[in-house]
Image (tube, rainbow, N blue to C red; front, side):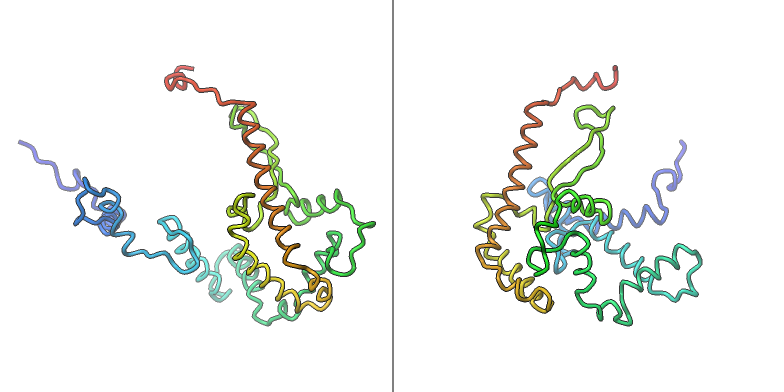
Length: 261
């Protein structure tokens, strides 16, 4: 009779042992898997990893990303003499310029933003906006090519989900910061909390002298109209998607044809 060595049956390398330990810590063996399999498999992870402040969700990918960011942060904050490659040194210089240790950027205040607004055609509440000199096409061109912002809509080239052998131009409305919350039916529900955030931005903007008088003219109704417009844009995007899928329905094929064809 021959016996196999333990090493032939089990992986005892450091990565394997670490992964096994993580799985044990993530499970809750006190729970009967037939009663609650999720708690049995993930109960330990949920207990040991509460959702951090400022996060709406938390998982293994988020935790890994956070850990990687800390590693990068530690590298970027090291002395430049301790860095070996030019890539690390350039990344550190860029990082330190953003940290603004000498408060050079802070001293400029809102001037850089106002300069960008002027370069993109101005702002209708900044006091120096002339609608007769403003051009929508030129503004969208500048936003897309100079700042990669897309303006009112974005476009890209990607695979056609109806035919992966070809690529198509994909055009969609520009996503806004709160777009997951916005829809025509949810505007009234979320408006109170949204109004608080807009009011906070309003108050902060009042510190910029050149737009104080015009910003003060914004009323509650005008802010609500702005939010409603975003909601309608989201609704139109969903309607367009439904129209596309109705016009070009997916062709269902037998599973085996994927291999035989």
